[in-house]
Length: 155
View (cartoon, rainbow, N blue to C red):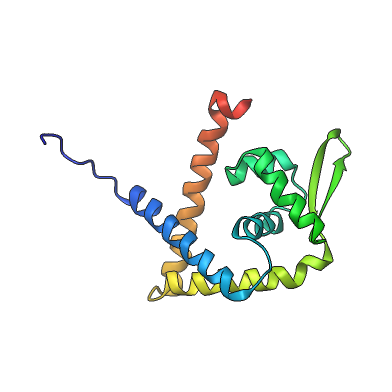
């Protein structure tokens, strides 16, 4: 082959790390017994980190189809973990919030997250961890800004 592989630097490494983190998170969730599927736990954790968002915004940010998210939210609502309320600025839209019953489940999810985080960051100093998180936040912000600038994101 005459084509030289591009220097992808951190890009493909981050893709690999994301896959590994997700796999490790799924395993950690199984050990903390939330009673939820991995997808439901992920949706619950997303609402936890982003309270009061519209369903459509949650689906977009989680990169899942809106109908897929509806299934997750239906299950979480049946368990009494989330509520969907009409958005006062648009009665057609639903805002998703946590209930108090979600607290013990979120504590178990947090345990899984922290276990995975500990394993992933092992060997890094506190300064290296802070620098890594700052760099990743900037990368996420850059990509989100670019996504919002595309015609597809405006629709």
